[in-house]
Image 1 (tube, rainbow, N blue to C red):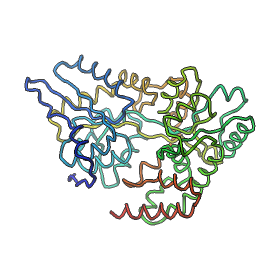
Image 2: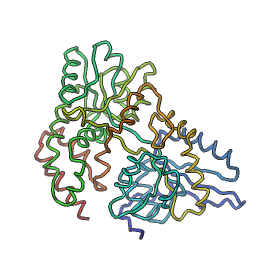
Image 3: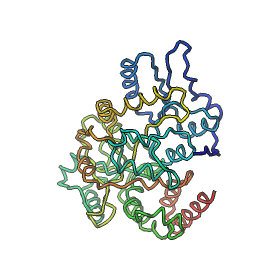
Image 4: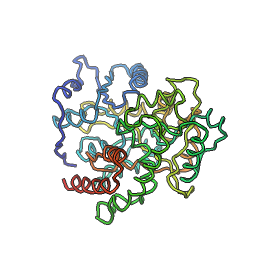
Amino acid sequence: MKKSAFILSAAAAAVLAACGGDGGSGDGDVTLEFFQYKQEAVGTFDELIAKFEEENPGITVEQNNVPESDTVLLSRLTQNDIPDVMSVNGGVMYGELVRAGVLREVTDHEVLGDINDEYSDMIARIAGDGVDGHFGFPHTVNANGVIYNKTKFEELGLETPQTWDEFIALAEEIESAGETPFYSTYGEAWTILPPLNSLASNIQPDDFYEQLASGETTFSDEYGEVADKLQQLLEYTHNDVFGSDYSRGNMEFAQGEAVMYMQGIWAIGQVQEANPDIELGVFPLPATNNAEENRLVSGVDLVLATAADADHPEEAQMFVEFLLEEENLQFYIDQQRLFSAVEGPEQTDEAISELQPVFEEGKITSFADHYYPQGFGIDTMFQNFLLEGDKEALLEELDSEYERLAGQ
């Protein structure tokens, strides 16, 4: 593939601060830069890197984790400053890297045969129809759902819902019992995405993006129900919704300020840290009244890839293969409370283990927001809608923004 020109920019200072070395130590040893985007995984990767270096004398791995990692990485690419090994989210960022031609193709690598086909296909779709082959390894997957306080569910005699109507009836029952059904933190716009993705991914047609690209449908055609349901859920949220952020939400939910919390499973670690005694469960948000068609929204949390022009391609690939080994992947998902994209490791954490059968049955769908154009701020558009209540204005803005970005 021909490398495309990136038009995004970022502060030069941030780029310089995040730049890696040239990989040469001058003494024959190899130094790899491992650029990874998850701040909460730094400690876990530190332990895995130490193990890798012990098993592979002569190879040093320098982990590089920075704020706003996507912006920094895109900016480095404009200078042809590509990290040896990268971990990125399996969303828009991965697609940008593939289309830029900066990732080494791994189509024929035997490890791909051990990866769940659903997730290989998911990142292939993100790369785009014009791209053939695979350029990264899905490593772990996450999920959007409804995290709930098991103790309160038992006290109130509640059961997890299977349909939208049961979900609303559950919220009303909790409210009648004098408890707050949901805690929401929409002051931080991205926290709207977990419930939004659960609704949109289940309500819109599976070929929505193909129809959208060909002009056969619009957001106005498909997102009215999504907007209505997201607005309805807001009626059962009684905290300072637009004055709260993600960190506060984790703390307040941990202290029992609400019975349910519509977030990704990545929030569980911080909730449990705030209250080690809390007993949690997670169920898929039932977006429709057809229980058989409701699916869990899950996506590739982390994709591992190496640079197409890496100075030390064999050593870089060795490190990627090490991270994908069953023992090391099991360690990672135990630490990070995620699920493996590779066959073998299983999640046994009691808080999320009830989702394991959902994965095994394949009742999953991908994150709707992973397929929007770069710069499509759907979270802030919905934030404005939830504040002002003008659905028609929201739908018009979604359509106009999509047309503007798709035409670039």
